[in-house]
Each structure stands twice: as C-alpha cells, then as structure tokens.
Length: 217
Image 1 (tube, rainbow, N blue to C red):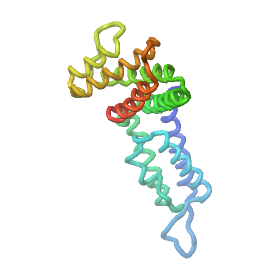
Image 2 (image 1 turned 180 degrees about the vertical axis):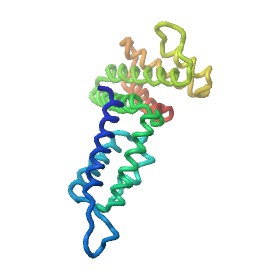
Image 3 (image 1 turned 90 degrees about the vertical axis):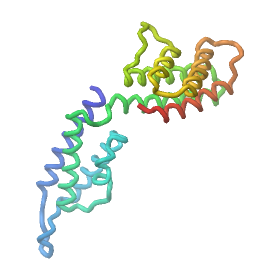
Image 4 (image 1 turned 180 degrees about the horizontal axis):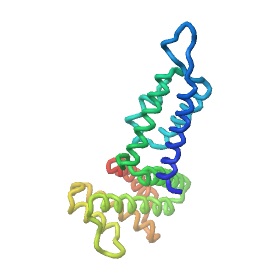
C-alpha cells in the first residue's frame, strides 16, 4: 500500500472516530448551553489527529491551528476538528495537497544524506560521495520532470539533467556551474578516481544540502 493510500484510509478512520466522539455529546446541569463530549474518546482521537499532521508535514499547514491547539473537550472543539479532517479528505480527493510520493522521497533522501554524512565522518568518504551523487541525480531528475525538460537520451547523465535545467532557466549560470562542480565530485567518487580527497566529498555534501533546500520538490 502506497503512502497516499495509507493516509487517505487513516483520514477516513479519523472521520469515523470523530463521528463517535460527536455522538458522545452531553451537557452538565449548571452549563446547559455549553455541551461537551466524552473526554477520553476526545483525547485519544485528537492525539491521532496530531499524528496525521506529522504524516502530512507541510501539506497540513492550513489545518494545523485547529488540530494542534490544546482544546478542551467541548462539542464545538470536536465539531471544528471534524470539519478540519473533512477538509483534508476533500483536498486529498481533489489532488490539492503536496503529492505524497514527494513527502516520502523527501524523508528518504534526508535519511540518505545523514547516512552519507556519517560515512564521511567515519573516514568512508568515497562511499559518502557515491550516496551524495545519487541524491543529486534524483533531485535533478525530479526537477526536470516538474519543469517538463527531461533529457531525450535513454540514460541521461548528471550533466544532461543540469544542461536541461539551465536551458529551461530553472536556475542561473552560477548555479549551473556549481551543480556541474558537485556532479564532478560525485562522479569521481563513483569511479574511485585517485586524487579525490575527503574535503572534496565534505564540500559536496554540505553544498548539496543547501541545494536541496533551495530547490525543494
């Protein structure tokens, strides 16, 4: 089951749980105009709603203020939370949120960068450079796909991706040359070329991290 399908199913379960919370409505004698919902059900449900926020990441920002605040177990708060969940569900169905494969890839490649950083710190800088090259290639490939400028070759190189992005004016000449330099370090690591130094790979990883942040997908 893909990430998008899992989250859609989770949202549906949360809405069903929310209906049960709403159904637990009650009033207290001295405040008949302020209905409440069953506290334990409410707290369990809201905790799971916060889990949804963490799964959605930046895509959850429109609903974060409603779901993440420290709300009491009033009927109004429960209705507001349920409304936010239904908004998430509708946006998912209409394809208006960030694609979940992008979220998964972002998490995966963040983990790969950490792995490359660790290898480099332990003296395995060639291995770290190879991973850095793979991360760079994937980001260039996705940028080309987004901007509809994928190279026509069957097995495009880092240079091919970089050229197409420059021609499409996705970034300027300075960035183009910078990416070319990073690609050269990655290629040297992949081919185990003599002369490559640990500080070269360190520069690749540090600059790569900045590039990923500048050109997030």
